[in-house]
Length: 206
Length: 429
Image (tube, rainbow over all chains, first blue to last red; front, side):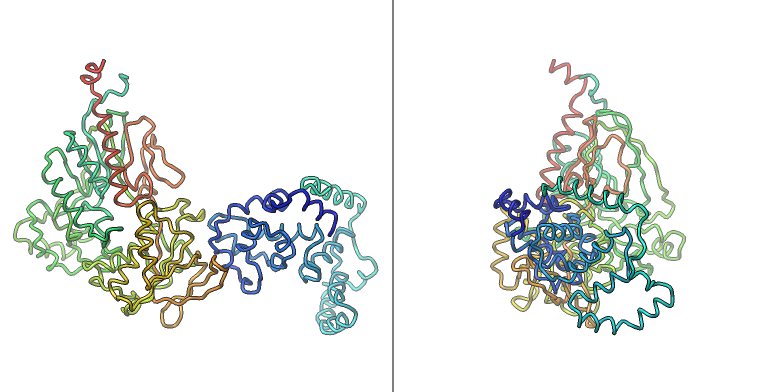
């Protein structure tokens, strides 16, 4: 158990709804759900999730902290917003899903190896380094995330597309040596650090 | 209190449905002068278009008949049909109201013999069947119509049908020269009994009301069940005329939804429970009604009726708001969703889908006097100066029973306003 996680458990004890309201983005909406089920029925990936949004909201209210935060369901959200436009109470369901995922990740108890989470991590690390996405490195890190063999296999499979993109000047092979970035990198990193500090303070994660 | 002394003792009631008729009768029977105006050619409103009432399953014609008898026997009550209020000015106790009277083209000589309707050939969608059938350009609105007189649709004027109708009338009742009139009246108080209208079901896009013939509204289902209705009382699918034996009722169609009507329409749960019993009445055990609901709101004594319907083996309850509807090649509907009791995903097939459509104030879309206070859904709370009131479904979503109670309350308040004359104020010190 991470430090943040055990602190949160100690602080909120059995009131998981309160924890979500205070610490999860748009979490204060959860209590407004009237369990009609339109979100679950409207989700194009609904059949493949273990927990629909409606079910997650009920689990939050029932205090099923561990099951909610370790669920991989909210990571499956593709942000199609079908649930948001149909919700009769106008809950920002998509944002709550992302809020839950991000909170679980922050506590360090989100499901390990969940592909969306892995990609999000790779993307963020890549972006945060130089303030610009290095597409070549992003692609390669994604290909090789499951090891060398599968990475080479995927890279070989995508070879023609990659070469095509190089020819069309959509992909610069020289990016492998560091690549382009912001002029004021120091300032950029200071902004990120400050933003993180403000967010942590607001969420009580300091 | 000199400011609110009434200079006119007449009460104006706007709307001739069950609420307006009740308010007008209560006030007139207390000795007040009452003018009852109705936009359409007949009194009775939406109540007259219902097949049965819940929970006693009795016919609306019975109550309407009693009210019409009271009305015919009261000389203080003046009824104006095809009349609309276009403006209200003045203050509590002293209002000036402008009325627009549309021509009926039929005078009081009419005996409702029906010869004019036989003579004409042109047809229009029948508003008294919510457009599910056609009616002639010369028509009697419905069997309980008051006044019991035919009416010519204004589109007949200038056509050959107009002359045919006039020639067919043995009583000289048809007057094609009638013109629209504007009259001004002075009244002390106004009761708005403008009622409700079904929410536009086509706006609930995932349910496909405008795309699928076999998705209908609860008010249309009432017409199907009625022996005076488009199918002679048989529950048939609009697409192919086949018997609809497997019917889905979708609750909160438009109601309790911030994207549509934000209020609970309150009557729809009981209406659907009642309608499951129409299906049973038509087919016995050989049918299936499925009620898809968020929660059943059968208030106070209606709980008994709900429990009775729960015992019925032909009725099934699914706790789920349906997410979307698709249609298969046979014209049947597939309902998609997830239930809340176990989170089971379903794709259920039904012959016919009845949307328990929400109640929207009829006054939405018409201009009310500036002084009027309305709530966030458009229901009327009354005027700021305390001289105008709302009754029945104009005030909040109500069933017939509560509409009549609300109308009686509104009548009493209006009487209090017009009762405060210079003479009574002096007498009371």
